[in-house]
Image (cartoon, rainbow, N blue to C red; front, side, top):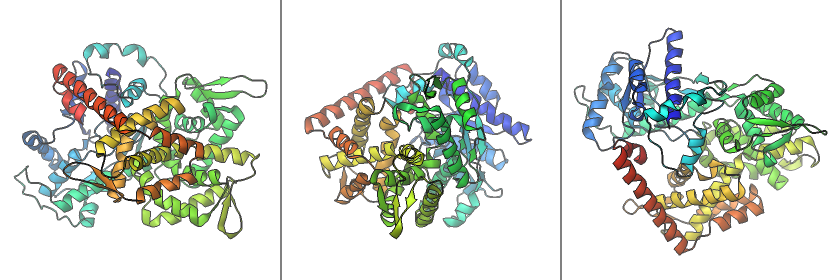
Length: 552
């Protein structure tokens, strides 16, 4: 975890430096108290960082003291905080934590003379020092405590080539616009009180701001050479491609992203496909295997799980193209109207998982533009009567379509596995936490057996996001007292859409993996509970502050 300290320290210094070089005020940085270690802690504090607990829910005194950052805001001091509340282990954005955001809004409603503007900031890497740690934690390995000794051991890893860090700022979000939208009046809280709660309108506004910030961070994404390579090779059979085909697929992704940009704020690498391949070899992420019939480009040994992190950085840019490609590729032919209906049914879950900014009410227009883009590149063919078809099976476009259709598969496989588990166990038999825990275990098993140990299958946050989306859309109902989930036949209706995207073999595998009898479920839940108790006890004995990290 000391690699994480170094990485986070670089982020703080990098952002501060970018402000300084542009003649802007240096922001105060809200940093997790786990970074307050000897040597580095005082150094960051000198660089205007202030340390806070990662969780302080229910602690009225701590909350009241921290809300005194109102003083900083009224002095027009910029404040930098990380709205996810922690580091993403999978490369996707995490659901926003609303604590600091709510405090910012609370301060503004106490004193609104100066405007407050949120600047979404995207930070992208090309290698990460703590990648192995991330994969281990996703599998359930306890988070290690930071220490000075561990920090001193990091030096030898800093000598490696880590490529570039990409910093991109998104379109500013003005708090006043949200106040108007939610009809929240200025100066609506007492100036001299820190404990006045936000009303329902203000709380709903905070939630909306959090989601919009995440969407704008994604809009400011940088499609880096490494993320493009990861997306292409992880979609290929055995994570390997003929070098010429690899170049063509990279060029295709670049062309699709440029022709129909995800957002005006999205940045796409201008490296040529060959430069991108050579760059990946230089970083030792991929390797070239010479062959008389044409060199082969493949992911370097044991790098697949780590490269999924970079693929996930830009997955949102291509996910709808991948989804539409999968619908055509898996069916051979499909009516455009049916494609639209299936996409509209499943889009809210992809939107929730990847913070897609396309509004549901305008989705039809977005889908049409994506389909037209696929048509213009020859990846799909439009027949008479509004039928979409795959190109000739022996053509280059057909092979490119198959690769493009792959990335969305893992998301849909997780959805189907979760729905299969719910359907098999029946309504009113599992709580939300039990469903997430069981899906996490099933995902681990599926990943080892069928997916080369890719972390996407066992990232607990992704299952939590899916269950939350099902609940928000009223497919699931949660009992406030017991936490038990109930549902009706519509769960099966969603699952039926899987047959249009997933292969029959994969659907059968997912059904089998999700089939657990009562004894297996009881055993799994008991083991999870015992493991959580042990981890919490260790945290209490070693370092009380770590309790907040474990519970967060």
